Image (cartoon, rainbow, N blue to C red; front, side, top):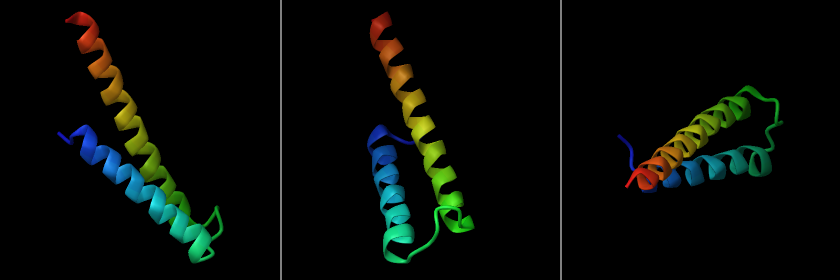
Length: 62
């Protein structure tokens, strides 16, 4: 299982990659590369949110 720190690092990395694709390399937001990277980022964000929710509920139960 990935730690929250690793997950946060991956999310920041993906944001940087998306920024580079669009703002440095000039890719359109609808280009396949940008859409693919954006979808991968979405999955990482969902994973982080689920992990945070799980930790919150575990802390409530304690």
